[in-house]
Length: 428
Ligand SMILES: NC(=O)c1ccc[n+]([C@@H]2O[C@H](COP(=O)([O-])OP(=O)(O)OC[C@H]3O[C@@H](n4cnc5c(N)ncnc54)[C@H](O)[C@@H]3O)[C@@H](O)[C@H]2O)c1
Image (cartoon, rainbow, N blue to C red; front, side):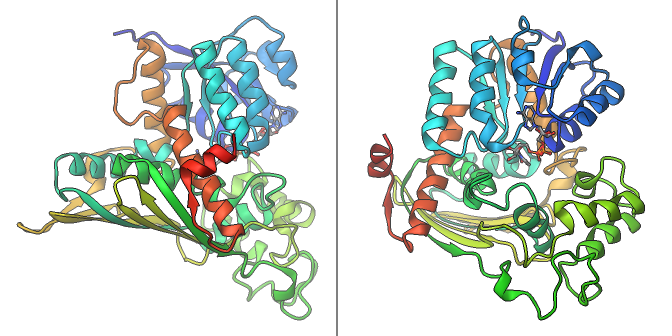
């Protein structure tokens, strides 16, 4: 087994590229080294240099300048925004890099297919960041399903509770608020869910229908007299649950300086957060933004063997979590990521409660999924083959994206049934 350190180039050094993956290098010092960084924001490059040890001469403020150099690393982490993935992924594969590619692969189905084809053409590993697959929580559920706890899966009920504050941060004020700028919510947020659900069931999807819309975060719902920014003397600044100073300064005062507060400023203080709220996107009234992505959506899926899946995504929950119930011919599994508990309920036996906290000592980023994914990607690059069964290759990830694109097609057509094979044929 090869244990030599792998070398990494990060393209897009923001929340994922820098705060997640560069930060994770601290835990994986013997296994990976970030040797190059690319970002259009000089502040981010400076942080990559001074905080994460990337040599100054290998920090590039344009991807073209980086790709003009001879190959510098074993793998490129593509962590730019959704619409930039395609160009950066193709350029990187051509230049000889394997890829860790942030999800979504691309907001466009044809580009997803082209990236998949390029991975084959250039013979590159392309791992899509479906971080949930690497968590102790979902790995345990998969193991229990493989052990036959529920028999044959017949039906699954799953919810992604986004949390009202996360919706406001990312999908009303932030990067993924507007479909034209990013992509539909069901792709941005829920390609993870479709990936997990299809992986757990081990089947492909046959047909999909979906409903959902943007209920709350629009101008017509603004309370009388609400100002364009929370900091413009809004009369509701102390009472509105979506008040930006209420949330971000509240987090800071509770000592929480990580995500999402550090999106406003990498080194947050009361002064610089207040300044960001007065001038930047995160201080805008949630009823006066240029957002259009949905805040609730349901998706019904029928798999190739008739298994049914009912999935709900909803902004209107206090906390963010996922829960699921897998119902089979011989039993039931209930999983609750909020409490990190799994309940095994065989019909012919006693219920067992599993405490997922006892299964791992790392529950940082995405329930421990971020770091564990990196461990498995490193092993893949070192040895040329995957060490675990959960590795999220582009081929597998495409299935989750197909479902997301089909669900969006159905939603905009008032829940019309989408047959996956005709849909994919029509899309070329
Ligand atoms: N796997 C997950 O669970 C997960 C979670 C959050 C976000 N994401 C995905 O990760 C990607 C990045 O999200 P983020 O939250 O880090 O966003 P971000 O805005 O914090 O970071 C993006 C970075 O890319 C830089 N950038 C923009 N254009 C560039 C260009 N042309 N060349 C080089 N750099 C450029 C920006 O300056 C910024 O630093 C998105 O596609 C997002 O959907 C995945």
